[in-house]
Amino acid sequence: MAEGSEGTGSEMGFEEEGGRDRNVWNVMRSRKRKKKEKAVPNIDETDSEQSVTIANKQQEEEYKVIMKLSQEGSSFGEWNPIQLTKSINKLLGEVKNAKVLRSGALLIFCRNKTQQEKAIELNRMDGKRIKCILTGNKALIRGVITGIPINVAEDQIRDNVTGAKVLEIKRLRTTRNGEKCNSLSVMIKFDEEKLPSKIYIGYMSYEVRPYIPPPLRCYKCQRYGHVAAVCKGKQRCGRCSGEHEYGECGEGVKLKCCNCGGEHSSAYRGCEASKRAMEVQRVRSLQGITYAEAVKKVSKEKEAYKPDLKENKSVSCGKCETIEAKEDLLVMGKNEFVLFMVEVINCSAQTDRKTEKIKIIVKSAEKYLGIKGLSCEVVEEMIVAGSTSSQTWVGGSL
Ligand SMILES: [Zn+2]
Ligand SMILES: [Zn+2]
Ligand SMILES: [Zn+2]
Ligand SMILES: [Zn+2]
Image (cartoon, rainbow, N blue to C red; front, side, top):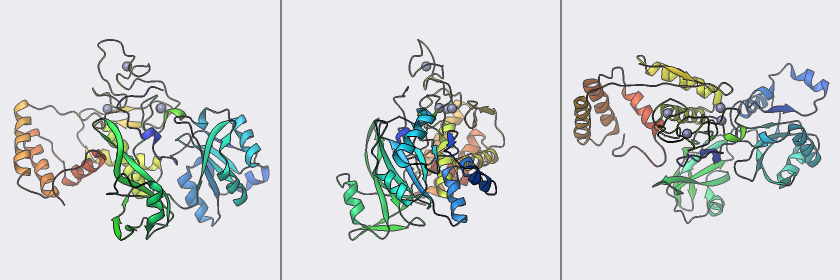
């Protein structure tokens, strides 16, 4: 696996229930069951989030577990499906269904509670270390609280939270000066119907914000939305887009992004494709929709924002979902650019309000750079979509 030094680390993120999966197989279904299922939407064709909705509509309880391989970067997608099916049957008996998720983990639909409980106890399969976690009918409710000193352990937090039922606590990591380190924020998985607005730890109350997982980026083909372990694309270099492993570019090769063709590494967070992938995650988390739906929605919105694109090209790796990348080029004179900067810096220093600062940016962009049709809402969206944990909007409140 070619891993760029500037990798986002999202490949190892908390992502477990990805969008539409291609590695789907059924395990020994009887003809009778198959017939019955024709009447209802085929659960296998949807992703786990959609099957949640279907299950709820039918008022039927599902017994699902997610099986993860302990070794980082490994995927059930690399296993022989026949052998994998045999191994599942050997350990649990025949299950309803199983599929490999985008993250490389295995989603198993157990027949009943006993089988589900049996799965939770497992720690090995075919000699490989594994771990099973419960995943219920409820949608995944995840939030973030901040201001938790780094010496407070996850277990300690979990045992002391009141005001909501907590399933899991995870300390979030951030990048500071190029190094990964613990942040003051923790992610909480709730056993609740909807996200609580606040929780308590002892006497102290904490505001809960929705958790937006970082986008997945594949270290093999460099595209967003899946990980290398389940990649069906070609090996691409994150530096130059060449068909070789990371960094084996030869001399004098320029940086070229696989996703937008721009002169930067494929991991660059300022890349349009990266911003779009983050926006997809945001839309997906906040609206509780699937990955595929969120991709569609974001593509439509982007179209609406940018009526006069100078160049418009679509990048697809063929087998994966098409992620459209747009090159939004701006030609300007040096003087105009400097004047734009001068006006934005001077004027925005005179106000503390975020909305006022955005208005100044919009006005100056039109005046000096000739960017028309930019609205304050759009700029605000860009700030949200482009911001990361280590880089946030500075100065002023709304
Ligand atoms: Zn890939
Ligand atoms: Zn791909
Ligand atoms: Zn290269
Ligand atoms: Zn790019």
